[in-house]
Image 1 (cartoon, rainbow, N blue to C red):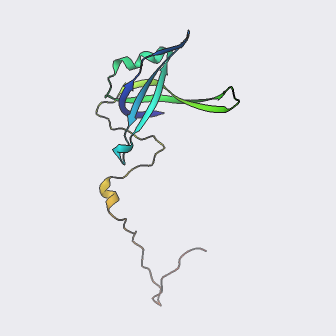
Image 2 (image 1 turned 180 degrees about the vertical axis):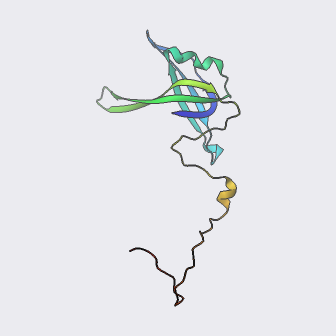
Image 3 (image 1 turned 120 degrees about the horizontal axis):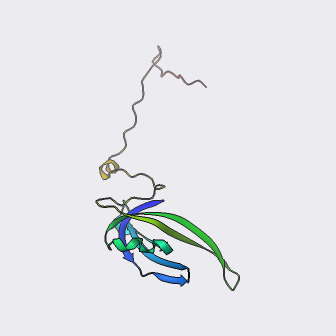
Length: 139
């Protein structure tokens, strides 16, 4: 999956084990309907990818390619939880790019198109000899 947004925060790398290092960052993704509702999404990079963030500055537009990972965890009290992680594996500059909504989001129309009421489609006015509409449906 891919998202384009503004790099909002880059956190320090954390050495979790002798062989596992993670670094988190936050991407602000524009909400095309209302900028007050922009999404702030936490991603992580790990191990060899920790250095991917070194070439970018906070405030810069970037395109993040990532995978969604989920895992179960059972607490000491027996309660099961599911954790999701957005694992980034590629980060590219997206100069002059507009923030993109996820591919599953519905396409938006320009504001001018939303302000005008939809016009009904023109219907043919075929009429029979007795001036009644012709019913040409096969059933």
